[in-house]
Image (spheres, rainbow, N blue to C red):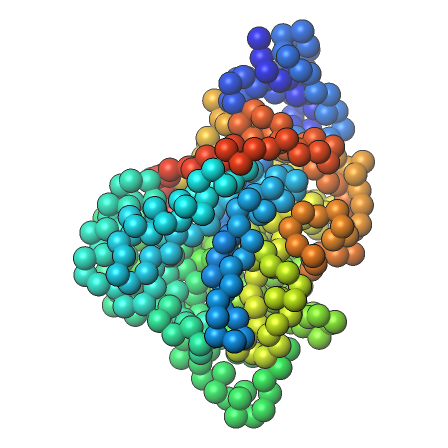
Length: 474
C-alpha cells in the first residue's frame, strides 16, 4: 500500500516532462509509471494533478535565518528565524534551505556548527543544511578543523573577498588564507562558496563618493560595481587554477563581468559554478529610485540592463547554474532604516515567491523549458551542493519532496498572501502559477493554502560534493 499516488500529464523528471503516476511510500518516491498501471485503491490517497506541473521541491542554496545585522545605533538585530522562513518557503514550494554556520575567533568550526544547531534544530519546518562561514584572519589550527568538517558532512566553506562596508572590517579573508583554504578543501573534497568583490575597489568607491557628497543609497551600484566583481572573480579563479582539485561556487553573481569570468573558466575545464539571485534578474539599479527603493537591495548591488541581460544569457547557456534568494527576512522599518551607501540593509524576503516568479519569467516569458526551470531552481543546487539524487529529482528512491504548481492559480502577488514579512519587493508582480501543494519527504505540508507542518519536520542534511562536480561536470 502506497501512502500517495500523484497523477499528472506534466511531471518534470531528469528525463523530461512526462505523463506519469508518482507513487510515494515511507517518505520516498517508490516508483514512477505510466498512468493507470497503479490502481487508485493501492494508495491511501490519490491526487489527480492533471494540468498541473509536478516538480521536485525547490532548493534555495543561499539564505540567512536568525542572522545578525548591524543597526544604525551600533547595536545588532537578528533576521527572522527558520521557523518563519521555512514556513514561507514551503508555502512557495521550496523544501530545502542552505544557510550558514558562522565561525568566530575563539571558537572552533565544530562549536560554530553546534551553536547554529541551536537556531535550527526542532525549529525548522523544511529540510536544511549549512555552509561554514569563515571570516577574518584565520589561525593555523582552523585548517585541520576545515578538513574534519568536510569529512563530517559539512563540505562547503564560505569566503569573503571584501568587508562589504567600511563598518564590517574583519570579514574578508586574505588571499594567503584563501590559498590555504583551497589546499584543504581540494585535499578533502570540499568546495569554496565565494562572495567575490575586490575590497580595494569597493572601499575606494566608498571614500570617493563620500568625498563627492554622493552618499544616497541610489549610488550603490557605483560602489559595488562590475569592475570589482571582475577583478575579484578572476583573481579567485586564477588562484584556484594553481591548486589542483579546487572547486569554486560564486554566490550572487550580479554583473556581466562575473558571468564572463565564469564562462572563460569553465571553457578551460575548471570546476567553477555560478549562482545568481532572482532580484538580480528581475530588477536593476534603476529600481533604487523607486519609492522605498531599499527593498530591492542586497550586497553586491543591483547592476544595469547589460548585466541583467548577461545574467539571463548565463542562465540559458549553463554558465549560471542556480537561482537563490540571499534571504534576509525583516520588517519594512528595518529594511528602510538605512538610506546611505554604507548603511542600507541587504537581502530581501523572497523565498516564498521565488518559484512562481521564476516560472513566470522563465517559462512564460523567455522560452525556458520546464526542465531548465527546474534545474535552475532545484536540481542543479542539489547536484552542486551534494544532495542529488536524494533531493532535486523525481526518481525512485529519492526523497518525496514534491511541489505542484497550478496554472489555474495565476495571480498578482500581494504581501497579504505571503508569510514572511510586512512588505515584499514582489508586490504587484503577476505570476502565471502558484503552488497548490508542497510535500516534504512524503508529508503534505501545504495544500490549497492550508499549512500542516510541524517544527520537528525539518531534517539536517549531511553532504558530500560528488566527483563529477569536482571535475566541472554538472
